[in-house]
Image (cartoon, rainbow, N blue to C red; front, side):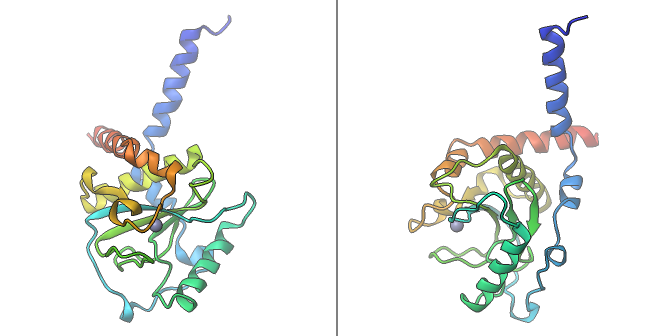
Length: 205
Ligand SMILES: [Zn+2]
């Protein structure tokens, strides 16, 4: 028997809902901890502690060539942040690579750092590798941003209105790059996060 168009659509819907149904707890378990990528903990005594009330998206702002080892990139970023910039740690709390894998960076309860004038205290900072002034984000990266934003929004009770990007807080940057910012501006992330959170509620009923 030949597959009908309807059965193809049914299979597609099933596979889409299978992805959407992955619990946020599984997303959280999949986050690569600092020790696993070879990072070292920050000096807690020098950390500024904060409570998360916003989620703010960034890009790397430099090309990330396919085949680059994301773990080596993270180690270089941590070293540069501490020695060149004199920061406590990587300025962001999470980094997303080309495959949509999520890495833990700065501890979430330590306020981040920035080269621009906004105060990142209270912000959960997410960096996606690449320069989105030049390239488009891939679907794995977009899915990972949604997963991570949904996880953080649920955990810290962040309102959808407080899911934004760097340039929404600073006139001095194009970060997260025009091709990623489009998804912020057009409410793609807020919409997907809302669906993700609604799905999560339905799953736990
Ligand atoms: Zn930024």
